[in-house]
Image (cartoon, rainbow, N blue to C red):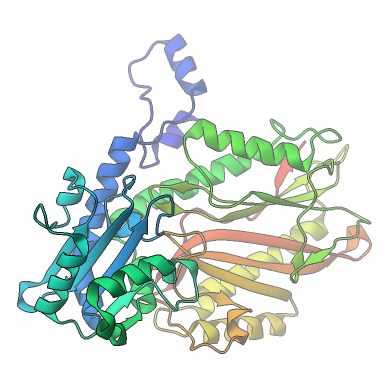
Length: 447
């Protein structure tokens, strides 16, 4: 990985221009620097202003007159960093209120322990001496919202995050008669979080590229020594690499190992995760599921590597065909069956019908990406296709993890079936889904 490669990312890196040979060599060995925290906050606050600018129209579309988000000390609401400045909130209870004020437009009110300057850039606050419950009651009396949206009754954690005591606080502030106007904010939250900003795109692309580079390094001879390196060694290397980069992850990196003659157990219908003490051997096909969190955005990434046997220069043809089958599944889902406005259930059904016609055994379990790793929006997923829920429509501009696999008998492995599991972030256009980074069309090779 060269510094010039990193310089293409929308991040801050060292310049190689006009440097001495020794300094250039030293710079190439240095790790990439992401934006300092202060610049990350400034960038995200700019995005927040744009999100607030879209919120009133969304509230009216969902029939919401008031939206209340309650943040508890040591128990942050997962919405807080996306509706308020992304800074630590240490008040006992901080409340953010959005009100449709009719001709006045959107009123944004923060009922916090103190009026901090960053918050005042986005919200009005009560005058000194006015309590939060008192001010909330005044807002309700003045604007009389027909529907007050709260984080209740949703099917996902971010849409049902209001605590019992938080609910009681709102009810006491507004009075018992207001409870009849309480509604779930879930539909509003989903549209708010599933609407990607054009300004986010380049930064997210850079994050995907960073994810790609980290995984390529993890699945290389630099990290993996056949006969010595364990699954746990690679997992711990990934954790340490994240720490060195100054980023985090939203889930534990998982690995799967398939080998000729091996018996692969299943978990919830998928190839089971391999235990940490398993040693990587020559001839193994290894897989990683990994993601990075940065700027309030998250990636999800699955790639595969083959550990060359002595004398081999490439993976066996049967394994390469297995990967080609997964590439075919990607093509069908991304380019043939998906378009904005189509039902996710219809897209899933059409994709599977096409794979059946091609004689390829496939699974599809793709999910939205963005402000969460398993984000809100339309999932193209065999599980959601069987649930008794109204199908969701694909929304242009949404981000998704194209997550799927095929199972293929491999002649060189005596007909043993091999699962090739891939996952790539993509975004929806009028022509279908497009990858942020080119997909994997050849296994990473470990010598």
